[in-house]
Image (cartoon, rainbow, N blue to C red):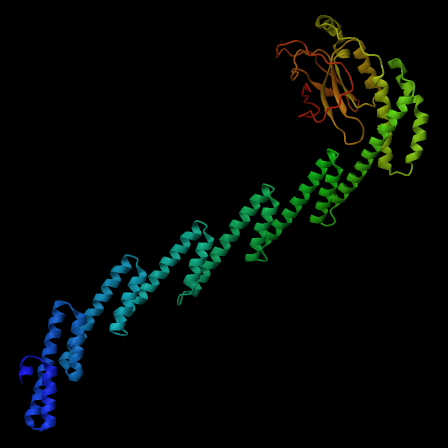
Amino acid sequence: ETALASDAFEIADHCFRGASRLRGGESASDGLNRTLVARVAWLRNKGAEARDKGDLVLAEARFREVLKFDSQNEDTKAELADVLERRVALEIAEGERLEKAEKFDEARERYKASLEIISAHDAATRHLAALEKTVTAHMLADGDARLARKDFDGAEKVFKQVRERDGEQQVADARLEQVKAARIKALLAAADEDVTRKRFDKASEGYKRVQKLDKDNAAAKKGLVRCRQGRHDAEVALGNTSLSHEDFDGAKKHFENAGKIIRGSKAASKGLARSEAASQRHDGYVEGVKVGKEIAGRADKPSARENLNAAIHATEWRVQQQKEGIKDEPEPFRQGWKAGVDNAIRAEFIAALPPPPPPPSPEEHHSRTSGAHLETVYYVILYDGSDDEAQDEMVKAQRAGLPARVFESRELPVTGPPATLVAIGPFKTPGITQGWWFGHTGRDSRMRIRCGGASEGARGAPAWRRIGLYRYANLSTGGSDSIIGAQS
């Protein structure tokens, strides 16, 4: 009784049960009943106090204890249900707050906690489902933003995550197709740009990446064909350049590469044939120059220009003798050999001629080249070392003491000596001679000046150059109508 009066229900229950075992009786049973009633009342009271203070967890615990002792207590059931609803409402409210702050993972935990308090709670279920839709929408928006700034890997990763969410496979697959299409478009654009800039290897890599995404992509197939053609053409161009510089091994290598890129390439086959022929002509020319110098060294030298052709003709029998030794060589070799012999003999004989007189003074020069003599004295000779008429005119001008300047000299690939453009006349400036216009006279090797005159554009002493055999390479930057004065 003392324990019961002090709300020490466990002790009271223990004492009343002990009395009942010792002697039984109504007093002990009545004590147990009064203890139960008092305990239930106390627990309900404490539960109500906790609920009113907002401690819903403690309130729930008190009300559940009541139901342990009195499972049919309807009032307590109602009070427990109210507490549970309050707890769910608080969890949902917190979830909504977190959701607005886009803390979706934390909001999800709150909604799930609500369902743990009351399973299948309608409001909590609806909020959780709505949250998942919101999360999906945010993920799609993130993926779209990444796609817009061409972050294809990032967009693909996000959309694959969306695909793993329940019920979102169709939407995610559509977005992934968009990523694929955009990636292909970007790769094709970059590869096309590389082709334009002749970066064919890099372009090929781009087109192959497209084919990994879409093996039947027509644009990628066409791009790879363009790359092969571009690489082929580049190799052919390099082969031609090497050939023009008499780099025969380099030319052969480039033409072989072109043939590997496009099997059966006619350009590559022709280039290889030209390389072989040019190499043979070059070898023949070098050998011919040696033979020509040897023949000229043993021959009688001309004493004057008028005897030059006769002296050259006198060496013909020696040339024919030496020619017998190369009759089994390929035709290009024989052609080069003959050109080398002829040019070497002529050059040796010309070098043996007496030196020309010194150039006249500017006053004497102008008196010789003025007025009526313009048409016959001011002219340009395209001298290739084998033009007898051109040589005759050059020597005549030289004998007359007229100055000359080399305007252009271009190496002709292994077909003979360089072709040299020599202008005869007064030159007061060492640079470009302005006011002169040169016109072709058909296939004639000479180019006559249509209007004479010397430029006054620069100060300084007159620039004179004696006529001779000059060997310069690629000094011109213009065509036949654009003559560049060269001081080299």
